Image 1 (tube, rainbow, N blue to C red):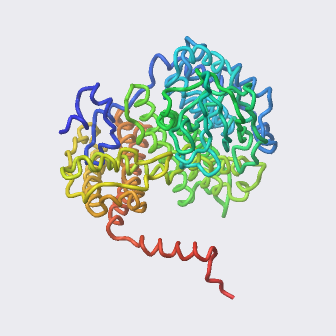
Image 2 (image 1 turned 60 degrees about the horizontal axis):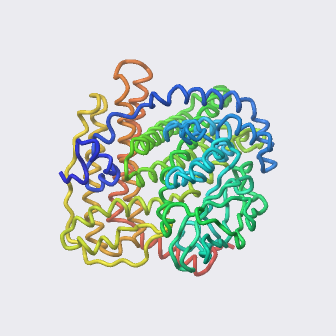
Image 3 (image 1 turned 135 degrees about the vertical axis):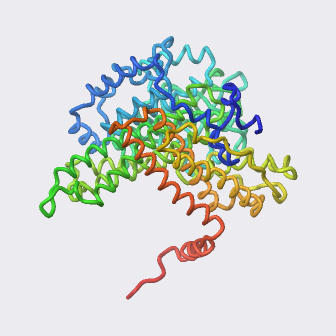
Length: 587
């Protein structure tokens, strides 16, 4: 087995991406087993924070409903978040923070999201992305200057990347910073849809530092600098109580030490921040799902139709079962990715993207199904269902849309198999080195026709699970090899045009999502004591339900890579684009 992809040595394993290895047909067992436990150093503090969150947020349903109507959280509520220390969750204790691990931080956001998504977002936009750049790339002086203020909430942070016309395509950013002759920078530009934009006084801003087409750099910008302004609050579909505004920079003079990380490395810094912060969004999704399950279960038991509780009806049981499996799976994969980050893995970008796609889409399904179970009540604003559904809708859009992240997952995973091919060793490096630029596909690929790819083999996992999970483990062993074979077929068939085959890339991404999430579920259930207890038996049932449904999805996706109706679908879409309307009215 190639040492670049699997080893029993812990240090080598930390340089391996378990999701990328699946494209070789390789399950790196040591990166899934054993399932990660809560760090004992964090456990006591985490429990204290969770109890504080519960005490503070319980019984505020009327407040959350009103703030949703108002489109803002009141100042005294923000002050209470400061007092609870919720802006310093991941900042080290030496700077006045609580110093939670990534996994523990994700668990806190999960708890906040069980009450209200806007609360979770205010905290999460600050910690997950707003000030994360200082933690990851700041100099000692920058950390000493800003982290104590960020930990106390004296400074609230926001992440300024998106611009009009450059959402997923960060390569088209127009904001620019020009060097001053005597040192420092002059910053100009406007950022769009900035979470915490109206309440933040610390901004991580991305701008070009070498003309309109130059490289991106990252800067620390304070609200107090002359020329920094924020626009009016956006009138949003959901997460309405959180602050979302434009942020404008007009001839803002920045000191020399405002540069965050190396000049020209802004794109790398932005991606590192987003990847590192994805478990916050994942944790929030899990918390929302748990609330949906709780509301739906109570509603189904209480609501009577045809003389009996609707909880007795098979289709309602199916909805509750699906929501529960989704929640268990999302919780498993978010914890797994948090573990990779906390234990020092160097490459977890694909795993983080998988956790974001799966958890955000699962939360949207849970919101929809819980509203459906509530029926008419679910549609009324006096009940929480419609607000939950509106809040959930953003999850598949911000911090990378599901569509863009699927392309990133597939292209990143195919880089290794592509570069293994003897005839394309050098040419494919140019193709795959930067599969996504600002979440956008590279448009120009060099390289010759791919001739072959070699599977690295499969590390058996059946020995890591109990007897009643062996058949489920065999499913993932089989389909990891099937993914490797299909990766070979796709690369042979499409060569340098693979990046333009978005139907095929989506299917490949969906297969690896099912594989990675399914292995995380198996690992989690395997960590439980295999006994006759109801808790274990139902957890094993969850693993079985996920495995069987994943098997059907993977089989369908792999088949459709070769036999499909893709060209007809594209032709139909082009016809509608040309007409700019539905052209088949019936009189």
